[in-house]
Image 1 (cartoon, rainbow, N blue to C red):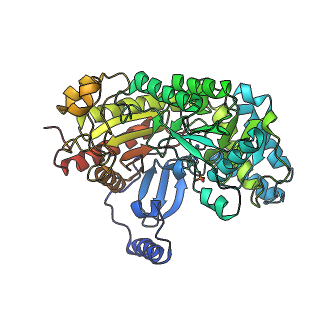
Image 2: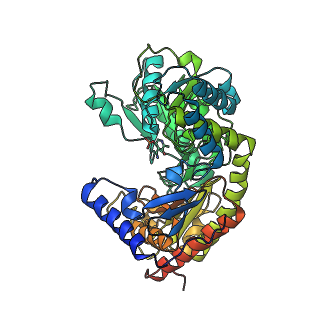
Image 3: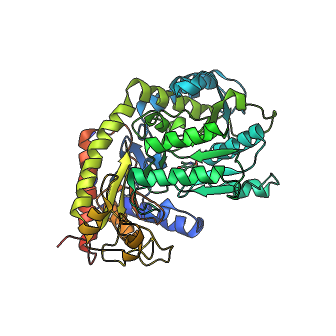
Length: 502
Ligand code: PMP
């Protein structure tokens, strides 16, 4: 595939343009105000292959959104199409509730083959409704039944889905108490230090919440963690911190749920992101890529937790045979072709180019990521430091700083010539806060689109430009993606008062 397919600013034939515009017009007239991607990405996909999407207006785009991280092999990969066709041609039922079928049998065999060794030997799987959030609901129900406890520990910035209110409205126990604990991060470390020190403080806080009888948080039914926060802004959890969370939970018989909905199937440079730290979770929540681009969600868990009653978790659409076949093909292709290793190596090279951008442009606060889950946080270098997380937004005091895990706080202060004297008065290593710049991030996204590149926005303040390219990305394609992104940032920075370095 060539990578110069897009026609930035190119002229589509009148008919194609009219079709494109008509569809978009009807969408905005008829669809919900709650629609999301459709607002920032006014494209009308009609064909797609690999990294490329073609719009109704004839324009082509390099797709680094990948169906919100679903398309591990990109669009319409031949092994996925072949697997789907085989099921269609076989006359198998397409919908089978939770009945046993050869297609499902093959999926479970392939899935279990990939699991972390500590779980694979005694795993159970529950097929859930088709979305990641369904699997999260099921996981909570599972651990609450198994432990007899109710509360859940989760982390700041976490994203696990949209359905808690649906459970409450259905008359289920809706008293899931969530204790919110700090997720370690360098750039906006809540303790102002980042790096291993920040992760250590975060872990200490978690331990004290667990052990202090007056913390207000009873022993929970589970802790749920994303090994790399995706929607939260592309934040990889340090491996040591993950091991600490594993030890803290294991020592207190608290099941650890790894939400690998977004990080799974090679995305972060290991087949499952927990493998980076060697942690074996008790429960894994899986969706997105496991369905090979079709809806599928499961919970995999240690068999001794399997004490819930028949029917404890049900749902009509748990037997999508096409999704299982597409998923089997995807899992096998990623495993056989070592695409996780490819993602690790290519992702590392891409990250170093993104870091060059963060060096060149003061409005790029930090480049970060793991494997092919990459992000750039846009900040306002001219903004007031320390008083808010987002430029122009009201927020809690104390969103901080710049620099990678190893950068000393004072270096970062010096690099930006800004100083949060209140913080540094008692925390000499505290970093300079720079406000997030969601407006600038949206401009970068728009400039990317103009150049034929689709990127995602995320992060607490919607200020993180995210890349989730397919794991089949070639070096040449990666270069094309990064060239367009760099160009888009240059354009966005030029239009921003303090965006470009003088
Ligand atoms: N968990 C994580 C880590 C996710 O990233 C998402 C979706 N972005 C979900 C759960 C929810 O998945 P879904 O949108 O399929 O319900």
